[in-house]
Image 1: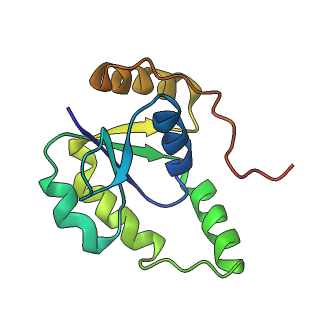
Image 2 (image 1 turned 180 degrees about the vertical axis):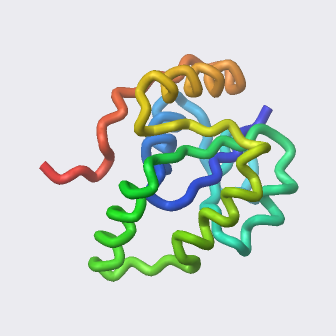
Length: 136
């Protein structure tokens, strides 16, 4: 079964990218073939493709205040997002019932949810969950 990682930016996209690729799985943007794991951000223009995806949707999620802080920091660096954070959450609300949510900030839940993803892809997924791009 294919997996689609559908994310609000700054919720764990890089964590999952590193995790899947580090375990030999092919990670590609939604629409490119072939792949074990497809990826897209949850922007409003991508919603029809996400809803049409025939496989397991996986959404990493963090506490909203952490996402907001990350967006503010990126916006100060000049990063542009095609949707506001509220618009991304509105898209998430439309797909969350179809998705396996990985709670990045809750270690116990995250590890149980990650075990479910391991079962789907047939690969034992392990990670140290170090923050990608963290300042030292």
